[in-house]
Image (cartoon, rainbow, N blue to C red):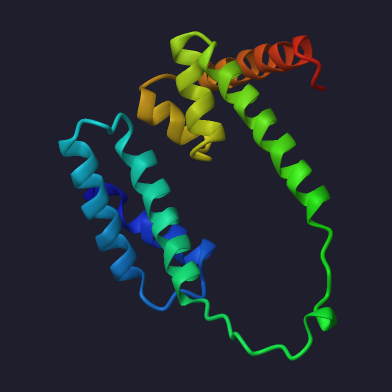
Length: 160
């Protein structure tokens, strides 16, 4: 975990510049990583650490937001938002993401690992190569293969 601390702090400062205390997030991320590692759920420590830190930061931001609730004399004065279209779009996006997840799981193991690290954790090719102990060229080739196979999988199910 120690080799990643400076890059984790930089990442958090760049992505979440409004956060007042990065130390708390780093500590929380380490604690979550240790608990997950003890449970045997961690395959890629760096990817897990960065994703956990991002999630902890988002949790902090959500908790920090304060919503003022004022009494409304007349409910008809409230603006009406067309929620049906938003719900339909959200359901469509969720179904598409589930299909994409199925497509990635159907890939060969190495290709699936590379695609997961790239798509889910947002890791750059160089870090993926270091994490999996393969060449950057292999990462690039596996990404191309994975993208092509995922596109074919989705096209076979009627998605562009």
